[in-house]
Length: 450
Image (cartoon, rainbow, N blue to C red; front, side):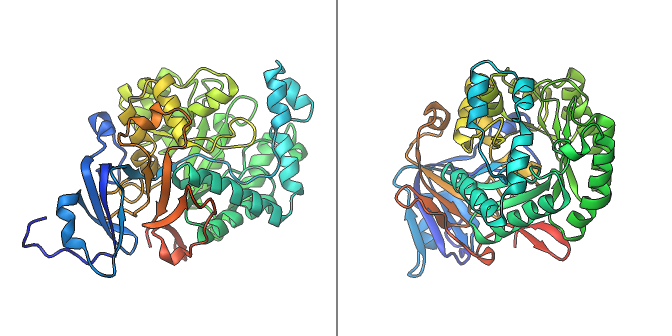
């Protein structure tokens, strides 16, 4: 900013960030060298107007923005960075599965646990039997946990009712949470998460039910931005997955795929061929699948905490990064295979076990996650034009985030420049949607920004 330039009106100013990570770039995912560019500004500052960043630079340049009615936060030399964007979560459920976790630790197999009434069928039973108030309270708790770990934007899936009314209710609750809480929530319809008991042995009929009976309601009421399916052996095969996802695309939804988690099953290739926003898990993706993702705009979303939780081989991030794929990181928060709301833990795991550099992990958890949700340049960045979602850390160096394994280093979390959580106040605030830059649903559908 030149001395003669008149600064735009600002109502919020943050100064003296020891390191300010701006994560520069446009709406597309960062690849190659750009996937390591954090845009670090020493002794950084940024100004906001109505919840959006209008300027970022050094604190020495920030004096032009000071004024009597401005809110000013002095970061005191601490690290400041964009809020995390978690692009794969399952937060709408009731009922925990600690006993199943203990059985697995004692040597029980997945099949033995399922035969004993565990697995996803257990969560389906408890979620179907829960009242709307119980589901809403559980969702509130899960979102609050994510917020205190720095997640200000998340993709959230249905998928634990597997029937018409329950799936619709799950998406309705996500819409209510988006309106009444500080976080931005991107809703995904995951009706075909598994085959429910009433359709046992009839996966094709269940896909037909989801397409004919549930998808039209989701689409007409604009309850979701994306649709998703679990493409895996003994769940839904690539042909069934393509049938559902193509129907979702015809209905106006974007698509995502649970792909190649336990076997190389063609999920990555299918995602790339459909132009899906993401292919997620990918523990067993084939070389052809990795190449297909690298040649496409589909983001590879890796979930290292799930591998940690289940005792599986960790996803090889280097394999995807070096191939030239767009890569993002997510928690996969869910009741059965990864009860983890912590994006900082995901970063630690990605760096320690998945061959990410620190910088690549941060980009994958912010800018690239935002891009694969259609929010590139709006979320996961603090460059001008972005929503002012940010975290302040009790650190003076960004490398401390993965280095401090599972440490409570976040001092405060802010959404659209407003405080949403601090160490001193553990409450989950109610903040009207009109006060926040976010995904907004209007008559034409889900759109970024106000």
